[in-house]
Image (cartoon, rainbow, N blue to C red; front, side, top):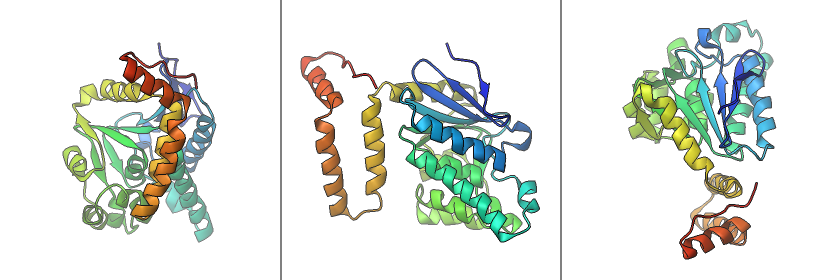
Length: 266
């Protein structure tokens, strides 16, 4: 049975199930879960705490109410009257996105409604994303004179340059099947099946050995900026280390013995 939702401040909810899946829910539904400084700070501190919790297997990121996340809180942005204050806010947002990328367990976005601007950036910063067939995505800053430069960092690392530039330059919404074709998300499901599909995906990943998931996620990300030869050298070293881990010894023996593996405790 899932534990009850608990508030991390009023803007972020956390829920943990017995499989080690932790759900973080953005909780500003009336504002379409716009990323206020309070919400960004709550995300940053919570991700830091969970990163050191070995009982966490998978992180599931969702939004309360009618939308996943509509980006930054525009009223809050308009209240910033100097460049230093704006830099602090956008810097904090970047720290949250990096924390998702560097989180030592897989992170899955569960998307419904709209994911726009920094909300689209959140989706692109997660390792995987599953979306409702009614979900919509956009980087619409250009429409209000504020180009989505920071969302472009994550977006261009998920989809091809021309797809990213079309989103950034037009600001137009794309539907979930288009986002799937572009590579922004992994899967589209009917709205009524989103919760179950996301939890099923998270549970299947959570059943894998957590130390290996952490090792593998870090290795994949570390090689992405390298040349091909250097990437092979680096990942070969990771695989050599992995081969001697208890998880690999047990997994290979179980395969040879035709039995389920008994993974070591985290």
